[in-house]
Length: 148
Image (cartoon, rainbow, N blue to C red):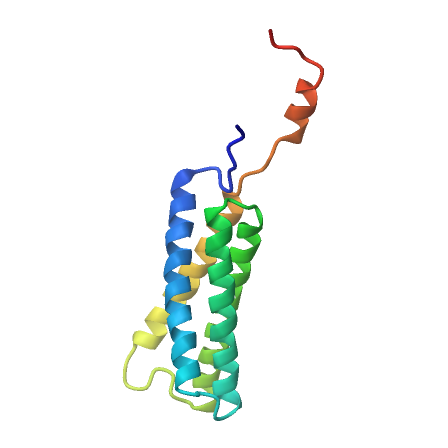
């Protein structure tokens, strides 16, 4: 029986699985909330609603791919995190340039925004560095050898 691996280390696999499950639950709930409240009034609401629905779909698919240990899970996880980073960037740029409410009265916006970005980029880096690579050269050397 061949053991399928997605990452080199089990800790990274379980961490990614937990984060993906959390993202799937949160964004599925958010998308249902957006649809039931009909939050499609203007272009901004429509854009963020589409981001939420797409992230909910990709995070749910990533969770399924991680459960069955498909190698597409890494690509799907990267797409999910990239979409989250993109939606955060759109939200931050909107609050800085359009609504001009970024950091009004408190410094939490200036502290939390870089922390969230660092965590997301760190997670992308961790997933990239610990993905499991199949050593095809080793398998080619084993062809023709008889183990009695």
